[in-house]
Length: 410
Image (tube, rainbow, N blue to C red; front, side, top):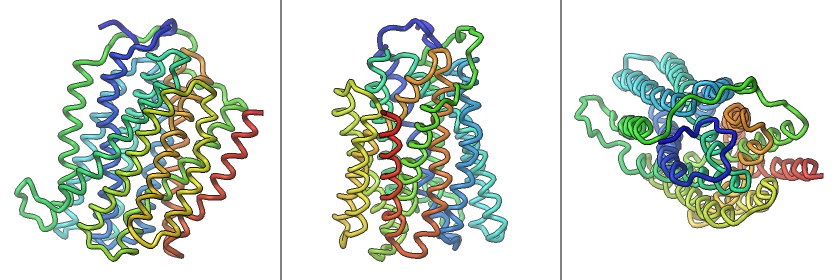
């Protein structure tokens, strides 16, 4: 298969490679989604508070912020495929480490505070190594799509991410609590989704090795250099931070909100959360495979269109009296994320030099990293004050993002 990594003269979108890549992206997204769904349930099993659990998520996300730009620049130098496989392998090894320490906690060999610290370290390792997959896949998409098809390609990239986001909660909701490995440890079944996900990620590594194109990235004096942090990129990063912080705030308290509002058991919480987040991801896929695929204008316009959907979503969830209302609100948020995510990534890619796509995507993914570090931290404190505060707090944030989009377009 011909070398496509780091190509600067590619004029047409390579749909064959894009399809292969999207298959792998599903697994990458699914892996992180499984963590998101498992953490609240595992945390509450050990008696951790919402603030402790969300702080663990926030601090581990900080590693994503630190390492993502590095992995992006490295992918410009040594190739997307190598960095992608490194990220997938890092996920497998760090997840097994995480499960090992949780199992020790279930046995009772570790106190709560010691367990919390060790799990934090394990999650930091997971984020630092797993961060390689995101910029590598995002830059891969930029390499194999033309400028005209960039938003469309990022839309497919986002759709693959959201398919993984749907599959993750389904895996957790179906298998959590079931001990498939005959391990004689009480509640070891809490780790089943993470262990199964590790096996799936091994399959993704094999698939990437066999089917993705490989070769040496073209050498250029600009390759691996950080894109200039100009006014446009600063505004774009600020918009991304706001959008992803708001999204992370909602996602990080969804399980708590459903359990506390509707008085659910742990198993009911896992299944209800899977349905809620699954509906959100499904609607995101709908917007990415319909609206985004037909859209040919400025990627910023996609982000602007998402803002009313986000605000309406927050209001619907906050005012809902039953689970159906929550589903409607989550679906509206999914539609918004389906527009905002490819719009943001495409804007960052088009703002960069063709030789620096890995560095550009890596830098743009600092915003999701910051968002998923700040969002859970804020939402933990807000949630303990009132169940609906995390949702309502996103409204002024989204209005601020809309103002920044207006400034960037004018």
